[in-house]
Image (cartoon, rainbow, N blue to C red; front, side, top):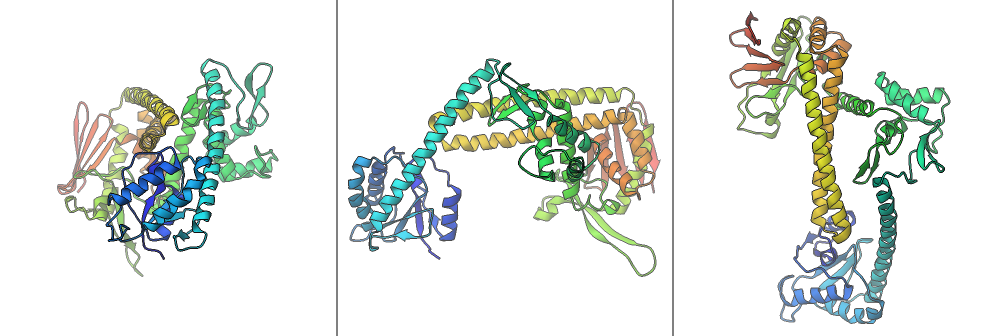
Length: 512
């Protein structure tokens, strides 16, 4: 394994971001990257001259008495700038001089390092450089051509026209009327959403489509979980054109409504969370406050740890505790004590049984109105972010600055977070409406709390509890504070009491 210092040639072009191939080469050769600040050059020959200057200035390392680098450096080529064919005859002397100064060379397509002592090394390198430039020219030509075509079509779309694009299989382009229409395959798309929201899994939906001998949308012979998922997450199903950073509403005829699409995304996320969570996967012993309970000291989630013991005879011993997640990271600043889980669950079940009798007149309407207002605000934030991303993308196409690409990545993360909040808000609205308002959700939780030994009841209890609990903080003094709508719930384990502060009355319960 090589152990060397390396300079990325891309520093001399237009980008400072390391590519996957460069990263792999550096890792495989146990190399150390030397960061340099240099002006970008259009031509290859200019960059070579800049490297010579850096060597003589001592910026690439100490020089020996012979004015060569004391420790050789590898110049790694993963990208290249413009090669002027008329100057190729000058490359030999320049490359030989660099190698004589202690600059060896390599390309990312192999681990071989070229040195001046190797026969035909310079000739082979020159051919490599020309191949790199020809490949880059071809790529740039295709990219520019595609960009020009898209630019024309985008202007047509923004002016209200519907040009022909590469589109999903359930659309057919009507050449005469210049618009998209739904074909027979759209029935399969609609069926996927109906069955998934009817609580069928993606695999079960795929099996049903195969049993019904319904044709697939692509070249696959049979439906599968992946093909169903691709349909369920495709925004074109409700008519949105989503190309890179450009979106246009109602470009396609919708197979389903926008609300149905986002309710489906919320359901997908809920199921993924449930299926991937080792606690929720075993609902009989799961933490009913999963992703609800928070540390009142540092704000992190509480997690369930410990175990149940099953002696040969006698009562099952439950040694499970709720503990702040900061303990996993050895955060000594958080002093939250552990809470014995079986006592916490018993208290929560008692409180849940009382929720039905708490005042909640008109709160369903107020809650939904609040959530819809939140939804509107999130959508505005989303639109503003999308515009900012689009503007930065246009700027990249003009000047190609890597820092802008990093900014776009950061904004896309923010956009994903907003989308997740939108899904959760829609899910909460759906849950409230499903049970006929907050009072219906309270009643449902109260009913479910009577028998949590049933796996289905326990799963539904956890989901609904997360909808109606706005706050669930575990405090350093051993108390627990919950907030549900306008009701504040104070649980004091030490005194053995629960105090429920309602809008017009306080209730104290003895739980000792």
